[in-house]
Length: 431
Image (cartoon, rainbow, N blue to C red; front, top):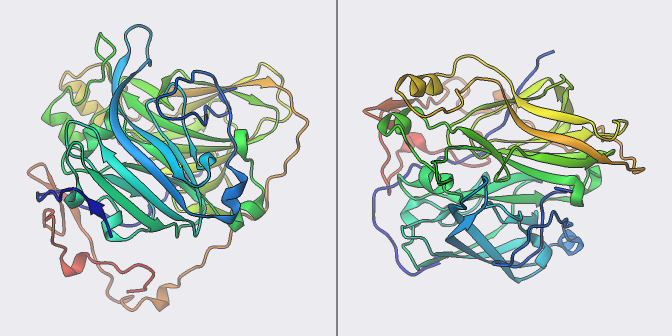
């Protein structure tokens, strides 16, 4: 059961369940900015941390998680005010919680499938908030529904067992109508799940397993974040930023060794879509998407990530000369109207959606004799058959539309405590 100091009764935000899949299109020492420092400690070094061997056998994990305000240096000059999550392990392996030094993002939570987790969330913000575990299958009252939002100084206790496959998941606030602004101010963290299949695959781990959160942001002359400078137009069409940040830093350069890496990419932007590919045309080797590990690696010339989507890449820098740089680009694409509309309305110099720009650079800085082969098989995924669906002759339709700046499903707007019969989909059924 959830335990919280007050239950806020208000209209809220539509909870959409299910796990998305990163769209794969075929076309032709940061290491990894992880630290085990306690909340509040200053750590500006580029230190490393492992996943923690005791997590292999699971065990209970309890974390105190706080949403609070602070400052961080992002651009030269004045520090930027940001909102952030701070965490501390109060029971279990301390290595289950990692931070990104010098970033407003985090923490990173690492767990095993089957592990029991208890997270005591405290809201130290000036407005109500709640935490949603994006992509995880958890009980309804553990999922951060906006009806459970708590006010300043209040707490909410999450208790659930990790049921999901190995993969990259994340968490962020979910209060009604202010989710976007709270994420934009900095509230986001990664939730990484491991399991036996992942262990058997022998993927790069420790300092060679690198999470990369991509976001676009706009700053004023004093280095402070600007949200919705275009007003209602931005809120309706989507807000695009002027600067691209990776792990909360602009112009990121990732130092690597001549060996394979596992890169976990999250599109943490509010509206921007990224078409990611290497500048020199090197194919991307995809090993996982939102739903976890693929059955086997696949190669693509680029991948497209919409907001909140994730993809995992196997990247082997073996054989590349020291000093070599490889640029990760967002490639040009057509059909994006939000950015063009914003420019016509006189918004700031936001990077137009669909334009080409640099996301980050990778620099080969040290040699390595470590050899690691790309697994031929990563996991086993059960497949459903269309003929087994009970409604195969009469599929259910869900129509998403916008009416008077409000999103609708099948013509209905969101109701905090109500779900229509035709909006319910039972998990793990073929209904």
